[in-house]
Image 1 (cartoon, rainbow, N blue to C red):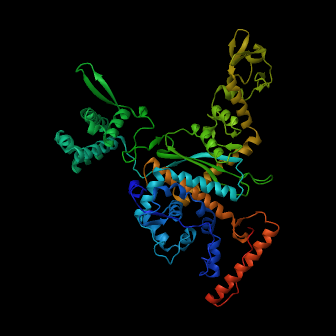
Image 2 (image 1 turned 90 degrees about the vertical axis):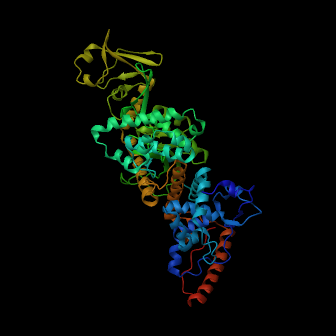
Image 3 (image 1 turned 60 degrees about the horizontal axis):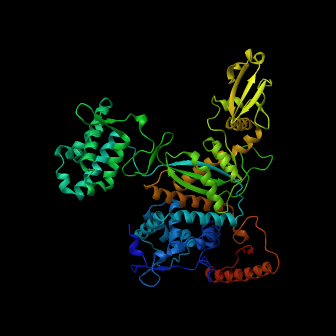
Length: 601
C-alpha cells in the first residue's frame, strides 16, 4: 500500500480535488433516461445517497493529507469516500469495484460521477488501496458510520428511546489450525524471516532443524501425524520452540522481529518451562488443552484473532439498533412500522465478554444524541453491575438475570414475598418468619419448626436447621436479583423482552447483504473498517426502503411546509417540470409523461 508520507502536504503529493455536491445540478442528470428507467432510479437507494449522504461525508478528515497547491489532482474526495462505503455495502472486490464505478449507472448517479468524463468514471485499484489504508489506520470508517447514521436519524425523525443490543461472530480470512500446525507455522515463519534478514545467524542453526521446517517433503510429515503420536510430536515442537526462543532472546536485531515475538508468545501460551533438578537445566511441558487461554494465538497470519468457546476463532461485533414496538392488539411476532437504524458498532476479539459491552455502548450513542431510555438484551448483558450502571445514566435494561433458572439462592428467593425494605414477609407456602434481622449488608431470617419440618417445598428451599428453627442468610444483591427473576415470569416482561430476537434478523441482513460474517481481510483494523462501513450500508438500505420520492425526496409522513415557502416551492416545481417536458419532447418525440409530485422543501 502507498505510504501516507507520499501523499502528504510536506512531500508535495497529489493536490486535493473536491466537487461541490451540495449545490443542485443546473441540468437534469437523468434527462437521458426514459420514464421507466428514470422512475426506478429515483426510487432506489442511489437518489437518497446522492442527495442526502454524499454531500455530508467527512472529507474534512482526509483533505489535510493532500496538498492544496501542488501535484496532480486527486479523484473527487467525496466520490472516493462514497466508493469505499459502497464497496463494503455490496461486498465487491477491488476489481469488481472498478467495474461498478466505470459501468454501473446507479453507482455513477449516486456518486455524482459524469459518465462522459473518463477521468471521473475510472478509479484504479491502487487508489482504492491507498484510501482504504488511510481510513483503516485512522479509524475514519467510524466517523463515516456516525455521520451517516446521525443524518438518517435526523432526516427520518427516528425514535431512539428503545434499542436492543447483541453480538455477532465474524470470521476473518484465515484457516483453522490445530496445535501441531500452529507450532509448525510459527516456527517456519520465524526461520524464513531469519534467513531473509540475518542469513549468518540462520546458517549457524543446526541443519537438521532448518530442513525439517523449510523443506516441503520434511514439512509434510507434520500433516501425517497419528492421533496416538500427537503428544510426542507436540513435545518435540515445544522443544524446538524453546530452543529458538532461548538462542536469540539476547540478539537485539532478532528480538525486535515480529515473527520472533509471535514465537515467544506461542511459547508462553502453549508451554510451561520448568527447572530440571537433575540436570539443572530447563525442560518444556506442553499445557493441556483446558489450560490454553481463550486470547491465545490462533494463526500467525492474524495475531489479533482470538477464540470463543461458543462460536470459534475470529472476532465479534457489538451491534445496537433502534426498534419500533408493535401497536396494541398486533400479533406477538410482529414489530411496529418505522425505520430502525443501527446506532452503535464496536468490533472486539472473539474472547471478549458481552458483559462489558453494555455501558460503553450506552455512552457512545448518548454522546451522539441517540441516547435510549430502554435497552433490551440477553442475559449476558443483564448483570447487576450493568443494570445499576445503566440506571445511573437514565437507561432501563430489560434483560434476564444471568444464569437462567439454575439452582441458586436468588432463584429460590424469587418465590418469596419481600417488603419494600428488602426483608422477607412470607415464604412460597405463605408462612411469615419468626424474625428477619438486618446485619450490615445481609439479613438473617428464621422460620418456625412447625412450618418447615414437613413442608412439601423443603427440597427447593434454602433453609437449614438453626438454634431457634430453620433459617438462612441473604444479602441485598440476592434480593434485587430475586425481584428481577420474579418480574421475568410476568406477561409484561415477556411482552417487552420479545423484541430482543429481532436483532437476529439484523445479523441475517448484514450477512446476506454485505457478507459480514466471512470477511476477505485479516487484522483488527481491517475488520473494524469493513464491519463499520457495512453497518452504515444496512442503514442506507433500510432508509431507502421507506424513502418517498413522491414527496420530493422527503420521508413518508413528513409535514408539508405551509405559507409562502410552499407556494414558491410549487411554482419552481412547475418550472422544472416544464423544462423536463421540453427536453424529453425533443429527445424522445413525446411529452406525455407524468409530472412528479411537488417538493415539500
